[in-house]
Image (cartoon, rainbow, N blue to C red; front, top):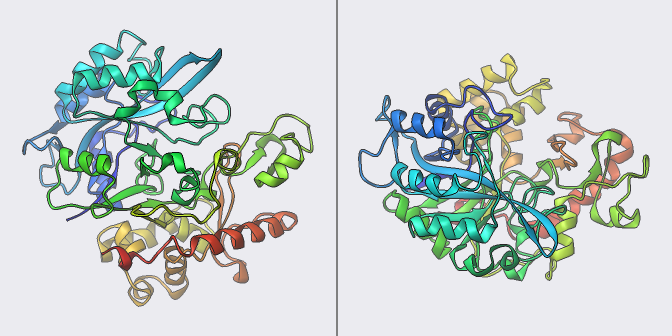
Length: 445
């Protein structure tokens, strides 16, 4: 059974999140996307947990839930949440986000009883807790050994385990003696497996990719996910496969190109300046325009901690593929101002009607099949994305990267000509080192 899972999203009770993030909306767009399993997010929030009780049921006793009003939905829900821990370590303030997976609403309630002592759970769907990361894991695992905790978006500059501004250099420093309960880390939008494979210290951890979505739109939810090939879908089987880092079950992670993430390169948004690590280092990490401190990108942070060359792959590691949201691909090809434009939706809906869901288009449909529904240009764009033959101008300092699908045709979003040469060099370097790692989807099945 093929299961595509996005285990980290947020409800409308988190800051800067769509007001439409309810179970019905999440289930509907998850099915359109092609997700089999979606996290609920935010189980620590009292109002959201109350809604989960009313909206979901574990009718099959497998630790996963179906919507009460849509029991035949193809989408299952896992009870999940994200919390922020703020604590001192060696005289420095550390701020780290963590994802929590739990097998039931009842266990979630027990976790909340413990965590409520360290912060107001009702303030935000992702609460801030005045406790160390190790203490968090201890509290969660004392409730049930079936729970799982792992660091969220591990490399973003703020609020992450390896963050440039308040993170750590080692997993062990963050989780202390509770590291024995940490089996995975979430790579985040701005990093991918090849970047994490450069750190030998991470070899024993399973690399997970999730969307961290704040809306249910298909260009957000499921933009990163995990593909399992599993005999029976249960909470235990999913968690056990993560703990075991079993590449026969967790086949691959679905990644956006890390350059598409908001913090891939080092830069300064206010001045419109971005650059790869070597350029930032030459400038002393200072903006060449205003001379303020640059926001250190994920690629530069990985470079600081890496002990292996780019292109190294540990044996028996799950694979990965780079995809981009179908709405973004269509938008780039037709020159729409937004993936939410009616022109994009018309094409998108026609493809979903024909192939069933977005992943089926992005991963399985042939050129000829897509062209018959739309046109050869969009079909070619989808195939180029699938085969990793697109360029992405790297994101930086909170600005998403930009897609370049047909630079030879002048289609897709391009940056001003003065910066294109650096992008071309970066693209060529990545393709040389990633060709061996990003295999065809058919290689996994």
